[in-house]
Image (cartoon, rainbow, N blue to C red):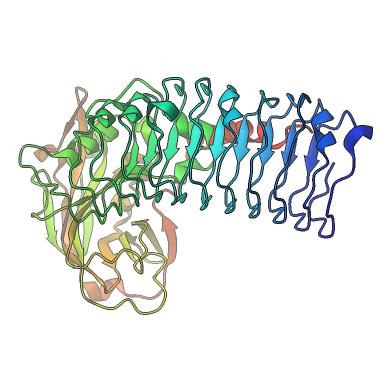
Length: 482
């Protein structure tokens, strides 16, 4: 039954007369304030969407009723929703989202019984102050998102929430929650591949994070109180990169390591090159990224020692010749940059800082996701490392002009590049990877506007098959009840 966008619908009818209803879409019913409790009688209901029902305050399935067929439940955009329903009778639920439910302050304790739940998001629930600790059987959960729940300042997730039962968790997003600490139990999430901790108030990250051998994305940017980091794992698990196999369009979700705007970190330990270990670890395991990845860390030195070619910040080069033997894996680029005192006028550019591969009519780019109006770290230097895999190094054969381009409020100090090779399961940066290049006059690079392409524009057959399979899994839920 599709009643979506029924603007004047204020309450649903009694559902007693439609006991075999399998799908109910009420999304966009902005005046809806009452859902008849007989909805709990719909034993065959698999899909229920209440997206953007902005006047809905609560919903009850009714005590003792059976809605065990329900697999998908959408509440995103229900800005007046104050309470979640009792989940006791929704034991087959797989997908549950409350994104943008800004009046929601708590979650019903019965959520812990959802053993088949794969996706749970409370993103931008800005009034949420606590979550239940009884979740000991959520063993199917793959995605858990609390990003933007900024009142969870003392989130007591610990072992009471992040439990050993979460053996399937792939993505955990607790960014911009104002958290004062990260629980040590986070190291128990052994299948975790993506962890977003940015924008929080903790002073350190527990050493248990070093046990996350499948981790391919770690973002700790904008953590202004962070003072030290644990050792990050240089070992990868035998996992096969499940994130890219379960989320359609994920090839555009970059893997990497991000410590941008963490002013109190003393990154440089002469005995510890974490950025290099992370680079080698990911490059050896392409199942954890698609097309390439990048690393951003605080930096107060020259370019890394392992770079073969080094250039001034404004240099433009063209590759003439390079070693393309069977062991060649791709190119690594590095740039040292900093914010200066220049004003940011008007809106930030869509690509304020990027690696450019410029040809006659096109420009391929690898950009740094950056908001110049927010990321105001004047005088703080960072190192940006970019790896682009062999299949996507089109620029090496076309004579493209290679340079880093930046908004005037960013200063490029120096940059460099290297070829990398796989030899006996090790990564090699030696002279085998020397690249012959020419410098290009800057005047010859400004021949007018270009058609811009992201560096990963080429979709391989393997990428396409993977995306089709991931999309099929998502559609299995999206079309539940049809």
